[in-house]
Length: 373
Image (cartoon, rainbow, N blue to C red):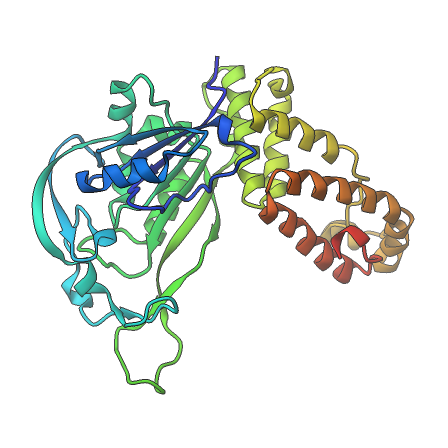
């Protein structure tokens, strides 16, 4: 039987840095596994998560691509600590972030103030040793340059995960650090689709005085990757495991606002009977409701390129008239969907639907839908 709950793992969990936000609608569904290499941060992590309804497991583990012993660099700025040495070639790089009241000179912040030897293990090894630690459905990594080796070193965890959020860099802040392109290429080869970058931190390799500072170059951010539903469908898993994984993929996609990706996953999950799994979890109940509401929408599909250039094409005016005849029905359905999403605190998904509906109304000359205003 597949794991009914949502297994959410975060590596490099110092402080309040988790990528999957706490949501009261689904807390009872969550097993939250937090990994942190610095033993001095464990008590704070336990305190920060002590009031949660979710099951929280805090592990003082240095997760790596291999098991063994490594040198760990404790940085001057604790959030920059890493298994990699800081890159002195970027010693002049700085980030003028709007919430920092000084120039964040990266090398000074992330260079080692001390070094220590630590035991390292892979995600797969840790899950194998802890009976209460299931493999991840949602995996986030903030490990200052070692993200790719962690992913490469745990094929079972990577196969299990349907959603990954990982820190990525566009400049090598650490020696021999893989950059965004390498991480993106590797995950694409393992059946993931790059979905988005979060807020970019830009910087400059040359520091000029105030008044002479312009655009900066991208330095770092987090990147979201969603599993391609076809990769799950073509795997060697049981039908029940495929059904659960696809339903979880749909859930995490919708939470992030990628509603069509979620619908794609549900369509794939239909052939494995995901609605017959009978799970008694809040996330699963929500997905059943979401599916039911989605099935009520009128099948208003704009013409494709080929259809627009066919002899029988409706054309923009023809499609506009067709859509106008269904506007009231569409408005009711969208209103019901937005109500469902907002009731579950999924504001990002609701905003994504409203934003795209507004764009579609304008580009297709469709009457404005009241629910999207």
